[in-house]
Image (tube, rainbow, N blue to C red):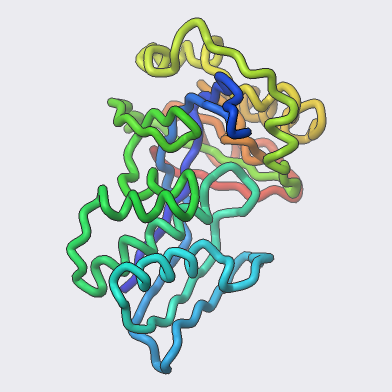
Length: 273
């Protein structure tokens, strides 16, 4: 069985408060985008489950990989037979694009179908939540307002058909702890749930990622990329999550590869929304 885990972007990200348990409450819109890994799961040739990774280098012991953690969670719940898992990594890590979480979520989905387990999306989502905060989002894989620590979901009506997206990921990664350390939690005057309903050409003035201010100071290359994307005609541009990827949304006829400025030593994706 072959599936194609996709990335996501964050449209707006407000850090609203620090919790007593050390986590932060946030408010963000998560949107699937068509930058995809390739994941194949087949019955094992041998007596044990294996994970083979190709493509981008993943600096993580196999048993700690989120894909293997997802398999172990399903194995524990359903006494699964061993499988051979092949993951071809295309989505960059350390980008704020949720690639690892998507791989784990699609592992749950693929195993559910491969073994005809008939688990519901809600059941898969509950298991996915034990792997990572972003994992449940990819079970549903629709535009979502995420609140709380990023695990309370509400579907939203957001249709960006006809728009294109450019994603640029520089060769730097932002430690999550550093990202949160640079933010002063603030409750916004207008919630993202309301702002997202405004015309997209107004988003740049009103929808922000709270991580950008401190991260742009620490990593000027990320700010430079955002500025270049805006200058190239993006109707809205932002860093995704805690970075380091930056994306721009373009009207369908405003994004041509020959018009994209050079981004040296960066991973670049162009696709339709």
